[in-house]
Length: 141
Image (cartoon, rainbow, N blue to C red; front, side):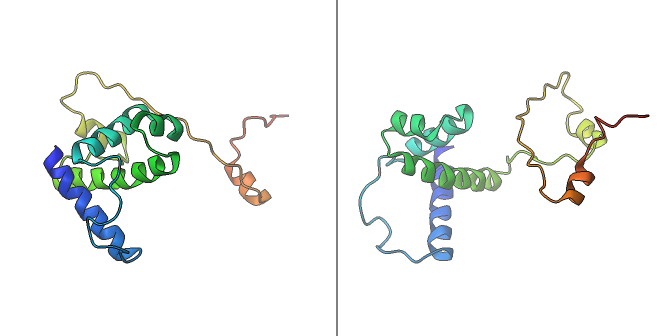
């Protein structure tokens, strides 16, 4: 996994510097980072995705400043996604119906789902609030 991830990191860096802003130095120039090898970068992003620590904890674990831990997490997640897409092992993210889920997991005897709750922000406009209302506190009187 380290070799394809190396090329994924390089492609992501090339895309980032050509699209967002030009390089200030030649590739390989400048200060050397704490995460020098591809193996260290891969360990960093896999550790982050497995445990989801705060950036303070992540920075302390890998000897980075907190802001760099955040930057590395975002850039290396894109590189990992690019690598998995290149290897054709990127997991499916959107299953639209129960029938599609049953087709995808037909050979799996037991399926356990783990989900993370995400906050739903209440709209400020009264019209939008009424559209999102579940009817939970309506009385049938």
